[in-house]
Length: 300
Image (spheres, rainbow, N blue to C red):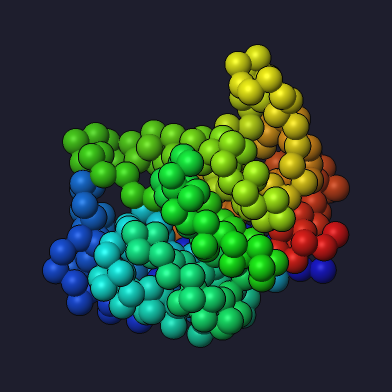
């Protein structure tokens, strides 16, 4: 049995070099990240030191830590000609990471190429991450359908992560994480119910940051939604990054203990001090072992 963290970010040297080769956002100037519509961000180099991060994962007791492309950077939204060199660098670097790391694949959502994504998945990636703002409505699900069809065919999961948050440069540094990221996840949660699940009945999906706490709106959905119960979908999961016992307890009450998987969003947030979030050893086992296994393999 292996403890799993489904949500980390670790930039390989190849991705860093690819970002430094650009002169338009997104790009790195040294270790300063420049994004469209956000203030420059000074990246601590130690955050992406592979040996150091492997040591941290071992200290956390992880048998597997899954990394993904930092979707807020906006690589997936670039034209294919610009996105592809960055995606290639990300996939090349992530595929070569040492134990205990695994990785989610990424894909251009501006110009969909399911054949190219299939070739990437053949390299051993655990599934596919897509930005939440690409899956926020019916049009988004129609556009990304070839990628989601591919995941169903391969019996691989989808990871929905916040995408870019332009227009936040005038606010405090925490604004993107607290407002547009949460809003994106909230919209993606309900869009999946309305448009994603009907078309992709076998797709397993995990929503980052507890889906922006959208599951807590089940009572309102029952009163103001489509007239049906919000229910619990056994193939839908939420991960815990940046949240603690209060939010996790509330989501467990809404979805059950079987829907929650551990995710830390390291290096942007730290893993929880108490893996069970105060809900006991059985919950810790579910969040770190049993539920990630079902998410990644479809098996109990």
